[in-house]
Image 1: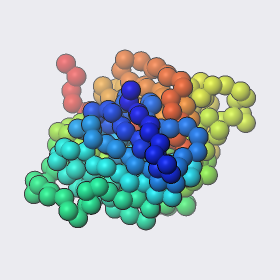
Image 2: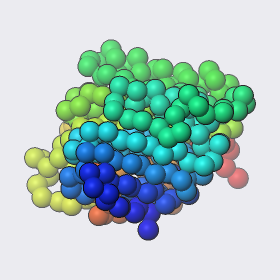
Image 3: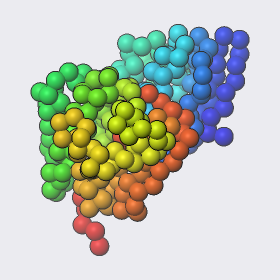
Length: 291
């Protein structure tokens, strides 16, 4: 089981049994219903975390707090590499304003001095209140990829435009306006993860499309004929799909109880995932020449 729940009086212990926290291992990592005042998030088995996993972990903690927890204690993995990664990607800083503790305490960790050469943008929280802030963040993400990864031959204007419209939809339609972003590079492969805690794609489209499953709603959001009516242009997701599929990458979306994958292997959808607030998006961009 990817998630084990144990109740100890007023305390709920959640054990994440996945070895890797990534898009494909987060389908069943969130409990349903109200939770106890104190929640322990036990990550002993985790040996590797991808950028999407960082964003997912942040919103999982936020969701637990919104559903009744007064404190979340994160029991860090045994893996020193994972502990190093969490700190160097500024994850503790991202939750520093929340009632979240770490065991062992962050300040007691013996961190490696090795820099993460593939690191681009640490976990960062942004308020998107207007078009200028959306444009600034879009440009920052794109320039970060280009400037720190100078060997990247990025011809992806669709990727830049798509990112801009994706962030614009958070500002205009998510009813949250808070975005959490991280970007990481492995050689020429770039992973971008973006999440918001808003109403999610299914709720945003429900008034126009009627009663559909969450997966059907997210799939419809990839249709340019549907997306073009969302806000100012709204072609962000279709443009990103076109950009990443051209270069062997993919787009992954978690919203409501749905997960949708769009890449060079086609488009697939999964229903009945453990729901989280808002929408989480992973973009993998790999501009290497394809043989």
